[in-house]
Picture 1: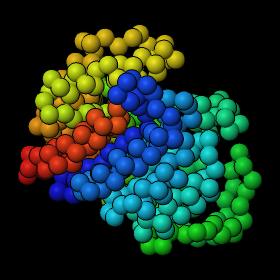
Picture 2: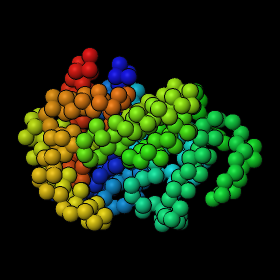
Picture 3: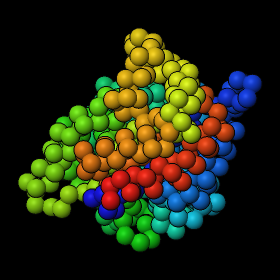
Length: 343
């Protein structure tokens, strides 16, 4: 698998600060994200993923719109979500928006569908959180039908049925590349196999090797249905600087700010420096000089046999200039090193 290894970058459009420490307006952050993606394209990075959120600390609520803007300024980088919260959206509209993005970008669109680890979109769009599982299952079932690009006849419990319904625009060539984003439940892995879709593992804490059983389950489930296994990817946070010490010192305060803000909502204690160091040394935080980050990515790719690694490069209010430098080092140093390490 590693011979076809792809490298991506993900961001949620975290609200960043300027040199004085003032938080930037969301509009400026969105424009900065477009510039970050342009740099990634120039460096030959394979994929840029934008997460969908509906809260003040992340600027991107409409990934496809920002991705369309990126499409007009880039040539080869693939463009996708990270993730699209399908449970609180309409599958037909999601398909139409990404098919439109695919047209604008000359076939570079992808979508990563997930349930999302944040729940703000449910009350915002009038969905009942008690139907969290049911909504995703049913909407994914409809989305899988749309991927066939044929008139759709479909019936569920939570929306009106469709009879021989044509959905436009279609995808110009082939099908829309669609991944299932999984946070770590066996049911989600089996669901991805049931719908015959690639798997994107969101590994945001702990030893990445603990996800090996999910990879084995995915392969075993495909074996049982007699189909070739689909690609597996990993999404994890990280930050690259010129030295290990610099990377940790620059990332730590902003990473802690983001982690503590989210943790307060979820009842987690504040993050201590020891926990940060543990994640950097042995967990799923890819922070350090290019060689350090490259070694860690190579180890994860080997352990899990994945065909794509996506680095979530933004972290809380970490400034745009530092993010640009991190992207530059990732594309120019880390990616070639990982390829060399994996032979």
